[in-house]
Length: 112
Length: 117
Image 1 (cartoon, each protein chain N blue to C red):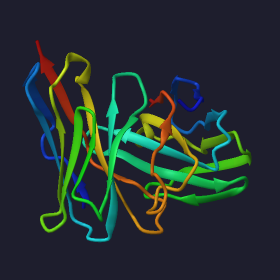
Image 2 (cartoon, rainbow over the protein chains, first blue to last red; image 1 turned 120 degrees about the horizontal axis):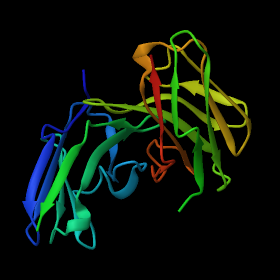
Image 3 (spheres, one colour; image 1 turned 45 degrees about the vertical axis):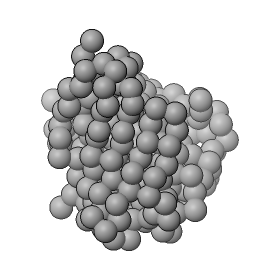
């Protein structure tokens, strides 16, 4: 049973527009959420995170929104650029637990 | 960026043979992790270490063992490889644990693609 779900395997967005990647979770004990970005033949790299005490965190073109009641978070990329084409993973952790639980990833394709 | 390297990057082996994957980090990070990535599953934790000689199991530890004799090195061993262990393996390190209170940020190696025939 997947505790972190990314229901869209892929997403195609026009360059310059907004990309919205979604992530749902089932474990109410999760209190920290992260997004990682992965290019082919490379390891994932950290992008942005959010604590459960917040509902929004922003870093340049990237904003993560957290809706605890819906157990849903989303990553917004504005404006989308060709270099944003990658696989994006959502991950979550619970207090005092060393394990990050990962979603299956969403492949973002930015069209010129 | 954390300096973290994995070896070998690619390996093809036969069922029943032992395999060891190596991870080396130069950041003096306390925590190290081994993940596997399979289509449709994201990354799944195999084992992790929270210090020299201190290791624990992750969610998919069966068939794997690890050792950490030095801060910088974390070895993953498949005692007798099976076809179900065909996967891409990622090593990661962090200065803090990934639970609440730590930054949760992991630094990953480039991955090791293992094929078991």
